[in-house]
Amino acid sequence: MQNFITRPYGVFFAKATLFLLALLIAGCSAVRLGYANGDTVVYWWLDGYVDFNGDQKSWVKADIDKLFAWHRTTQLKDYAQLLATIQQRVQHNRVTPADVQADFAVGKKSAMLMLEKALPALSNLALSLEPQQIAHIEKKFASNNEKFRKENLRGTQEDQQLVRYKKVLSHAEYWFGDLNAEQERQIRAASDARPLDNEVWLQERMQRQQDMIRMLKRIQAERPSREAVTAMLKDYLARSFEHFTYVEDQEFFDATNEGMARMVALIVTVATPDQRQHAVRRAQKWIDDSLVMAAR
Image (cartoon, rainbow, N blue to C red; front, top):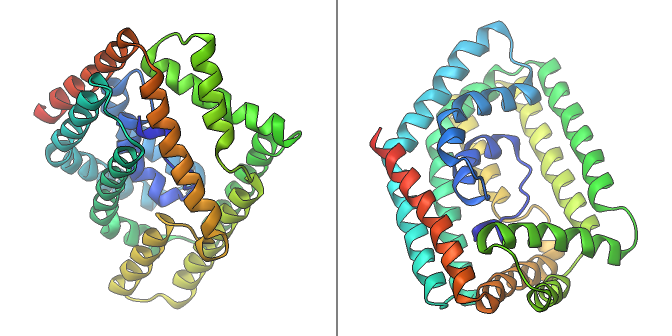
């Protein structure tokens, strides 16, 4: 259920490692297959931003392989335990907004642990970037932002609310199966009750991107020590888990998180016993897959 409250971070370093967690919490129906090929997916995903040169390719692949090996042997059992806890709450219809917020905090902590483990590799990558590669990242950011505008800033506010609601409904149906008209009405009301300002999200992601580009250009120009680069990246990633414009938009972000938590709790509350069993079975498959992958 945490995919309802996951924020769109948009940080390419962070996404590379968060991909591992996302396979387990973003509604993927082929968790084991996706995880088994995750190292390759992450490599090509990063390459789409950086455009690796011949010298970088081999050691970047090796670093990603090491990260996956560490994650598989140390983290997957914890994910299975978190899923089992959520599963029990859903089964007994005991999910509150506070529970949702707490589960998200656990997921965020796990993602931060993954990023800290990846920091040495990320520092090496940042130090190796050439000016044309940083320019390539800038171009990719611009393309992503244009896509965001097309998908999220078209039409009236009501149009944008409908687009957002359809995404929520898709996730809800994945977990609980077919919903009736009254359930859909209540979920739509909870979705629409959340603050909506996609311009804020766009400005926040652009601020984050600009900060990253400034940081990478500074590293490329000044060639600081690896320890200094690691400290810079750690600070950047920590801020990415909050919001780069949090001071200016604190009320919006806080209200968004609270509204999302209330919506998730409502979805569980309005589900029928059969629908909750559907969600329990979904969660069990993820638990089983996590334990099988951890044992490999």
